[in-house]
Length: 378
Image 1 (cartoon, rainbow, N blue to C red):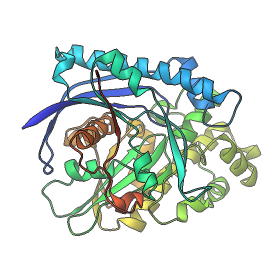
Image 2 (image 1 turned 180 degrees about the vertical axis):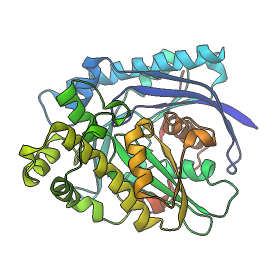
Image 3 (image 1 turned 45 degrees about the vertical axis):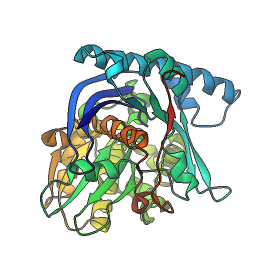
């Protein structure tokens, strides 16, 4: 038995929306995934800028957030239409859409002990535009149960990537933030954020190159990482925290980098040396996470936009010479489609009223059904 779902993901990098149309098996394990179509839509510059600005306090936030949620739903609807057209499939054949939304604040367990996470979205409008049931708001139930609401993908990683071998596998997503899942047959699956992925490198490339990112890491490869700046960045307490832990632009942002540049005495550094240092920081944080929490891992499967950064991948290989590093594409899912597939699967779990979190990864009090369903019609 299998059903068809759509997964939509727009991540911390703010590079746009990835969508997949997938046929998923109904069995818990092993999970069978058949990707029928995959599409990407970049954000218009005004949408990207508004989503970025909503990461910090500003005037008229509620009004602006509501309008950009409408704009985001329309991009989601465009991606949905694209994957359906590619597969020559009618909307009525799709069980549901899993739409994660765009995270603009992530402060679990803070302030009142519960905290919150906020994903911009208008799932009701998406249901109207597509004529398909929509599952959204995946993170808040885990937070209500005392968890961090993140990361949510380790459950999917375990279901799909653990495979038939007995060795420990780590899955590394290099998105705006970097996060890792540790998959082993003889112990609980854990997952956590390692630290910044592409977000700081993208900011620095935009500032100095007027480009959205350092494609392939070519600019970083012309610089030289600075030890003093690296030490200033590595002093961040988040890196030493034990899982469960998660982070976002609330911590690793422009101001955080400026503070590190000041402490690291980076006034005399060339911009490309700072970029090289940021790439080194991302690679180091991933290596440090693997050595602390998965020292027996023999393979590392990499996905996310950072998997396309050749310089960053070379740094990972240099930091982890004893680990086999592969793209998730070699195991059946393109690097820019893993999270979208994960949210299609989480939508399936919600529709079936099955739990989607892993308490060992999020710190929640127990297993919970994640998400809220917005029916396409009354």
